[in-house]
Length: 91
Image 1 (spheres, rainbow, N blue to C red):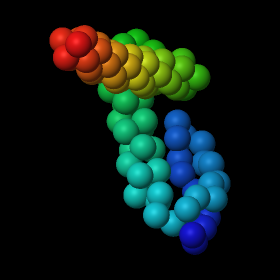
Image 2 (cartoon, rainbow, N blue to C red):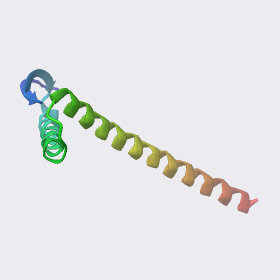
Image 3 (tube, rainbow, N blue to C red):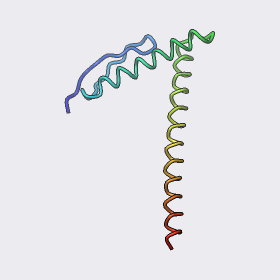
C-alpha cells in the first residue's frame, strides 16, 4: 500500500493529508462534492459565514448517512423476517 501526500482546499482552507494512493480519486471527489454543496448553499440562502456553511454541509451529509444506514438495517431485518417465516412454514 503506497501512501501519498496531498493538499485539499475546503471552505477556503488548505488541509494537508496523507492518504493511500488508491483513495486519491475518492478523496478529491469528496472534496469537490463538499465545495459544490457550499456553493449551492451560498446561492440559495442568505448565509455567507463559512462555519455556518460547513456546519450545514456536515448536517446534510450526516443525515444522508443515517438515512442510508437505516434503510440497510430495515432491508436486513426484512430478509431475516422472511427467512424466519419460511422456516416456520417448513415445520
